[in-house]
Image (cartoon, rainbow, N blue to C red; front, side):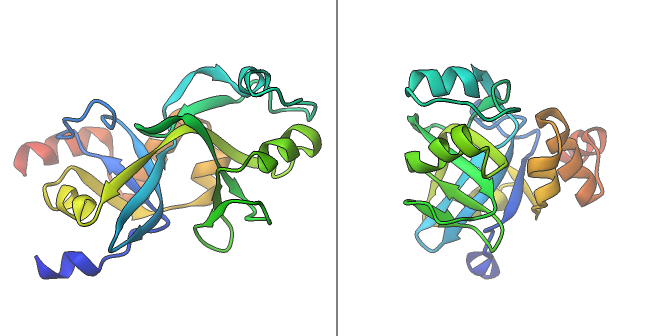
Length: 189
């Protein structure tokens, strides 16, 4: 499969197939923030952990005064650097340490963005994760070739406009499939 190498999956969703054996990724929807010949980086956007933003802000000693954020869940973003916070957000803005995924979405790991969320409630569209998901060069392409993942263009409405439990089904509908079909398809693979 020579053609696989040149596919750029930045700003795509990965939908874990039923065949996904890795417990970290089973049943997940991953948003790919960067993909190049060095590898890929993304965050899981549908696996909340037992921590709210209020609890996280308390832990890192930042005030959370802006309304509407305290009950938001913190997510398990993936098994890499799980002690570090990452913020997927729109708009991109001008933070200290941001990976711009596209013109609208950034992934920021610097504290300044959390200070702004706490104080001003900006950026308003955020998904806060602990940890991220990383793939070495060619690894993600291999996993896709082995039917571990389906890919579909990401949609900011799915990321920021839907509750976490609706994100995976919505990404699947964007592909025109349902869970039931997926399990059946996997059986035929």
